[in-house]
Each structure stands twice: as structure tokens, then as C-alpha cells.
Image (tube, rainbow, N blue to C red):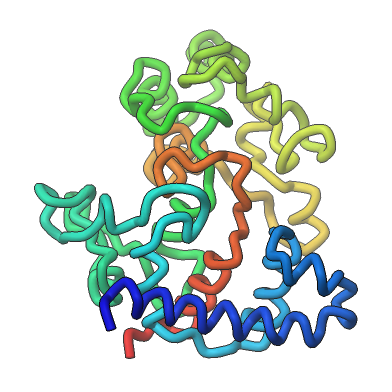
Length: 281
């Protein structure tokens, strides 16, 4: 059996297993069996994977995980991951990242700075989850828009210099978040992030003031869970600040529609595999 046939057999086998169980339990979930069988309901597919695979802790075969990186449209419309990431040699593949094998995935990217893209047992750690679900901001910026523009570097320097509330911030940094084309698209940051309430503001994030930016995202939702807001700025550390990350990091595969499901069923399966220890055998 050829490599492509093998991958399709693995993929289809798990898909059929999930779908068969879903159809049997459709009434219990409140879904229409016919809609699920047609395969045109992304919300139903996501719910199916969550109920039948993720919540039940079904062991994820590493062969299936390997197949995901070798086929197009696995995490959203776009080229297969291995088209760009098939070697640990930075001269042969972007970031020196080899996604052609389970071992390569666990090794991570070899281009300096060397980075782990998967941390076994910790699905929210590493870089893989971040790059497969987080859209570059502002929404709609082209994947090949430069990451070293004057405005982006200004935000980076402000963070690295301590993210202070100063005249420089008020005059040079804060206006960027309300300026069209400041970061590569006519959309502004404050169009979607203008208050600490959702609705109308996405993620309860207010980028119209220093206080709002430093408070972070999801303040109300996290408070209900007894947790602090999600910080988007870490003074002195732009690399780990979500604000800077979102200005320079493209969601993968490159050029994926920003409206593509962020919780794609295959991503949920991948994260489950990582939570289970990211085993290659």
C-alpha cells in the first residue's frame, strides 16, 4: 500500500469510527442525524469530536496525527503542513521544523531560537496550538505582510522598555490601535476591542486606553472562574506578550481564512494526543 493510500486509510478509519458513534448517539446530543451524515455542519463535527473522542479520552493513534500534517485542509483550507515544514535544516524548511514524522514534531524547530512546538501532556503549551488557531491581528492582515514595520517595532520596543504609561505611549503607541493600516489592514484594533464588556468588545478587551490594555482580556469571564484576566502585555518581554505575538504570527496553514473554525475537530484530536503524552508508538 502506497504512503498516500495508507494515510487516507488511517484518516478515513478514524473519521468513520467517529461518525458511526455520532450517528448512534445523535438523538442524545440533540443533533440531526441527516445533517451529520451529510458532513456539512462544522459545529456538529466539533461537538461530535468533543463528546466522542476528547471527553471520553479515546486514545489517539500517532499514525493519525502524522497523517494530519501530510494532507491539505487538515486544520482549515490550505496546503499540507509538510509542504513548508519537512526538515530540521532551516535551509530546506521554514524554521527548521520537520512535521513529516512524529519524532520530528516532538523535536521542534531548529532555527534559532530553537523552540519546542509540542510539550507532551500540556496541550496549551508549546507553539503548535498557538499557530493553528490564533489569527494574525488586526483581522484580515495578509500572511506575507512584513513583521518588522516601523509601527510593529514601535510596539515591540514599548513593551521591551517596560510598557510604561508615558507621554510617548499616549502620543506614539496608543494612536496606532485606532489608526487604519497601522499594522497591515484597514481595520483598526479598537473596532473589535473597545471596552471590557462582551458584547460589544471581543474577548472583553479594551485597546482604547492604557488601563484597558494592561488589564488584559476576558476579565469578566475569568473573574467568574476566580481567575485573573489574560494578560496581553508582559512589561519587558515582547516575545511572550500576546499583543506582539498577534501582530507578527500568522495562523497556519499560511493564508487560511480568518473565519475558519478555530476549534477545528482535527485540532481537538491533536490536542488530545498531546494531553495523552504525545506518544509516537
